[in-house]
Image (cartoon, rainbow, N blue to C red; front, side, top):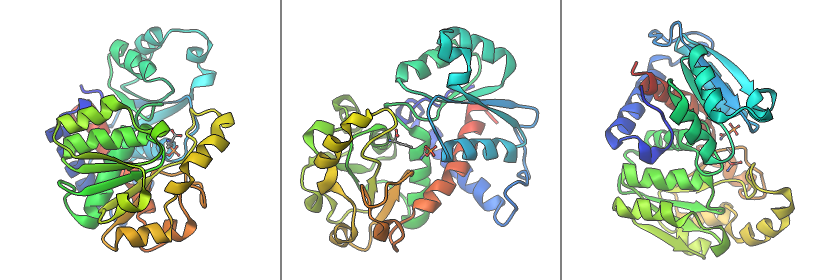
Length: 308
Ligand code: CP
Ligand code: NVA
């Protein structure tokens, strides 16, 4: 069994195999009604617990549908309704759930919760987002980029805005899939130095740029995300928006980037804040393919975790 905790914790060959399998499963079910199982149902007889300590639309629905298409069953659990949210330890929760279910996906706050769950669980644990990283999202992003533009190796990716969990997983992926990342954002919101150091150590060129126009010129992929993540305090909204406004992805910025650039956003998007509707709905945007690919990529992640 394998956990899927972060992109830098799974081998590069395994990551590539996960994406190959995701592509194969996606093609194999083209045109099928969404509720029809795949022709292969390796999760037959398996139960997957999906724990959410934060809101979710895509992660919740794509994991739930993915389990069903693979022939398994899932249960969605809200952290606040579990004893976990009322004083039971993470370790005990892990031990108990391991007696009932075959795999656990968790969306939670501090990374330490995910890591403790994985340490004490006898079944695979998948990271469905923490305050620090969002690896399933970035697997879907790589899959989507390659569908539209071919191999991502050696490409220039520009991330604009807050150096958050999505940005961190993108940097992990840069190291594993061998592409370069320019971060364009304010000094106060740069991604963690440790994660930048990881990607540089793997040979990726990671640049920090304050000027959005300079950053995007010649980019193959432009990525942004919300300016206020679920773990950020509402009281920080105005201060963050003021700092981040120069990094909005709009039509003029996409023009500076060039026609070769595709645009991605993990969603939910805050239209006219970090991105304009003109870009979201424009010809360079692949955001809904990206959302769809969460389903296919995560099905492959689940098969990898269970060795199926
Ligand atoms: N992108 C993403 O993870 O979306 P949800 O918060 O809706 O799951
Ligand atoms: N950075 C965002 C991603 C949401 C999918 C958040 O953590 O809220």
